[in-house]
Length: 441
Image 1 (spheres, rainbow, N blue to C red):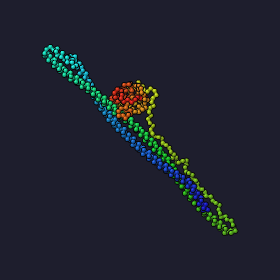
Image 2: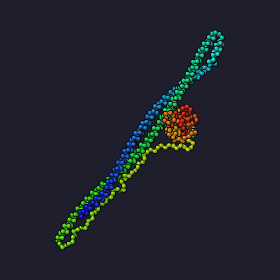
Image 3: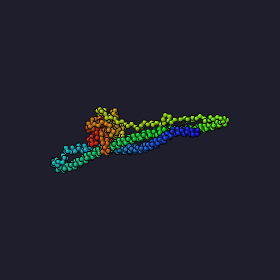
Image 4: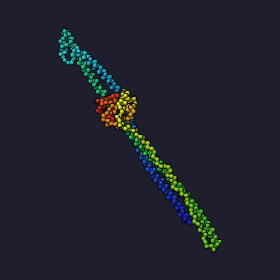
C-alpha cells in the first residue's frame, strides 16, 4: 500500500515537472532575448549619439558660415559705399575733361596748338611792330606752356578714370565670387544636415522598435514566471494533498486490520480474510494547464510608426515649354534695386537663389531654395529662351553651382548680385566665363 501511494506521489510530481520545466525554460529563453535586445538598443543609442554629435558639428559649421556671411555683407556694404564714392570722383573727372576739351578747342581757333611750329611763326611774323612781336612771342610761349599742362592734366585724369573703373569692376567681381562661395557652402551644409537628420530619425525609429520588442519580451517573461509560480504552488499543494490522503488511508487500514483481528479471535472457525479493503483510487490533483491564457500576456511586438521625416519633394521637370518671360518680367523688374542679402528671400533683400525662387513663386511655379538644387531639379536645355534660368560656378566654389539668374537674351540676364543687388547684368566680361548651363521650369 505504501509503495502504491509513493508511486502516485511520484507520478504526480512528474506530471507537474513536465508542465513546470517548459515554463522555466521559456523564461530562460526570454532572458536571453532581452539581453540581445539590450545590446542592440545600446548599440543603436551609441550610433545615435555619434550621429547627433556629427549633426551638432554641422550646425556649428552652419552658424560659422552665417557669421562669415554677415562679415561678407559688411564688406559688400563698404564696397558699395566705396563704389559710390568712385562713381562721384569719376563724374567730377569727366566734367573736368569735358571743360578742358572745350577750352582747348577755343584756343585752337585762335592759335593752332597741334604741334605745328609754322603756325606759331606765322602768328609772330604778322605782328605790326617790334613791341607787338615781343608781345606775341610771350603770348605764344605762355599759350604753349599752358596748353601742354592742360593736355598733361587731361591725360592724367583720363587714366585715373580708367583706373578707378577697373578697380570698381574688380571689387564687384570679388564680392560676387565671395557671395558664390557662401551660396555653395550653404547648399553643401544644408544637404549634410538633412542627411544626418535622416540618419538620426532612422536610428530613433530602430531604437523605438527595439525597445518595443524588449517590452514584449519582458511581458512574455513576466507571464512565464507567473505561470511557473502558479505551477510550483500547485505542485506543493498537490504533494501535501497526497501526503494527507496517504496518512488518512493508512489510519483507516490500521483500524480495519484491528477490527478484523478482533473478529478472528471471536470466530476462530472463520477462514475468510475480509480485512483487505478495496483499493482506493487517489483523487488526481486538478491540472492547472499551461497557463498561457491565449498567448504571452498581450506583449506582442508592435512596430511603432517610422518617425523618419518625409523628404521635401523635388518638382519633376516640366514637359511643356516652361515659364514664359512675359509672366516673369513684370515681377522681376518690380524688384530691381532691392539690395543683396545673403540668405534673403523677401523684398527686404535677396540672395541669388532667393530672388529666382521668389519671382517664380509669384508666377505660380514652385522651385527649390538654393542654386544647386534649382539646377538639379530643372529641365536642362541647350538653347535657352527668355524665362529660363542660367547657372554659374565661380572660382572657389568647389565645382558646384553657386549663382543663378533669369535668362533674358544672349547678352543679358537679371538676378541678385552682391553688387548692386537686383539688376540686369551682362554676360560679357566676368559672368560669361563661368556659365555652367541653363534650366527650364
